[in-house]
Image (cartoon, rainbow, N blue to C red; front, side, top):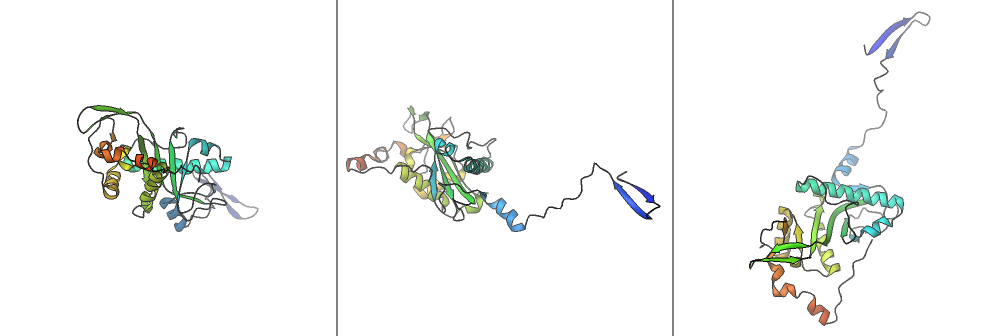
Amino acid sequence: RAAARYFDRRRSITTVALNPRRRPPSRARPIPARLRLARETTMQHPRGVAGLTPGDVSVWTRDAIVRLPPDEYRAISALIDEAGARSARAQGLPAPITSTDRLLEDQRLYLACSDATRPRGGPSVLVGILKVGPKRLFVAKPSGGMEEMEPCCVLDFYVHESSQRGGWGSLLFDTFLRREDRHPARLAYDRPSPKLLAFMAKHHNLRAFAKQNNNFVVFDGYWSEEVRNFGVARARNGGRPETARVGG
């Protein structure tokens, strides 16, 4: 029985002995609806992280993350891991391809944070991520034949669903292109989603590509003379690519 009743003649009261295996009702206050909604529609951590930029993008390497103080390391790791898991679910992947542990030394991770981010006292509110790095690939050329290359690759690109169509994807991608002096056609894209292909067509007029056996997409413009010489003219004129700013 869940309870056993007995009568205390001395005090003339009825006492109920509850089953000790049943837990007493929780006295914790319910989470307000606005806070539940915030958890569902944002990627946030109550701790601040020095180097995150409110309303802008910062770029991180594995070394920069490891050198953070322990509390900040745990906070940014939780944000990156959550973003990686959400990106995997959005793409229908069986497992995340982005996490703090999976970030290699030659990869860069761009983090876009909302205006609500407070690097000193918290919170840290992440809007989107972009992971890039080199990969050695064998790629089929549009003219025929294979070419071995090691291009910079877009390995993961995700903007939270509540922040899509708000310009965050363009901010992430354009910041990467500017800081690393890249041309969007001179990149390889790892398993791009239909949303990413539509993004590249809309913002960079990149549509044509040959299907590859390695799941990477290399647009036909990669081999055009204009794109191949991208950055050469700047170097001849004394231009210098902007150096990536690590950790802020």
